[in-house]
Image 1 (tube, helix red, strand yellow):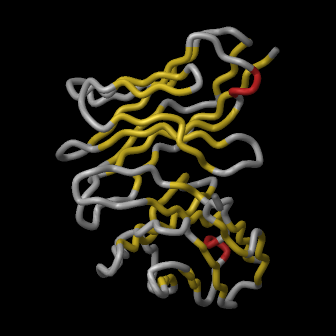
Image 2 (cartoon, rainbow over the protein chains, first blue to last red; image 1 turned 120 degrees about the vertical axis):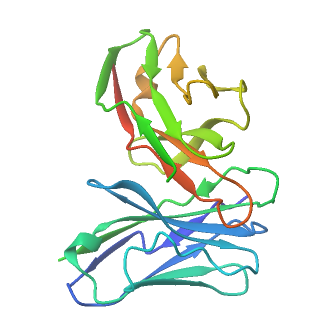
Length: 116
Length: 114
């Protein structure tokens, strides 16, 4: 079946502009995660949505970052007033979820964001 | 907080050589442990996992054993191939509640020469 998809695949923006990154998880997956991959910081967790629970936003680096998940499916990560240090590959992942089991997270291809 | 430490690369080996990539972790409780691989130009994909102490994960000739006493999850392969060239990430996950995100090591780049 279809995997996790992300759009756009590449985004170049000017410093100070807002950007929106989209993630379509695997159908039926209740958990959705955003991560960031950059040369200096490696792979960092940003935010986690689990079913109808309040999202875990503990990884967001500043209040310029926000995310929402509509209808328990598609998610949008928004970065306001972008800075050069926001340049990275933004990865989305989804998984089944359980209070007692650990399920594989399936990753999308990522969105490469370049802030000029 | 929870963390993962893995050996820094890059690692360069000849084909058919033995591979070990060390990974240790710090976590409270009993996390699940994973190795993810990122081939050139491709996305992250799960290589293997282990969910409790003494479990051995294996896939594509790679193995790793969950060692609680040494808090380690070292990745091994007896005979690497050129096609194994990739970046390997060790990760842990505390599942349940709102703690399902993965915590990754910095990654180890492996290059295998013919």
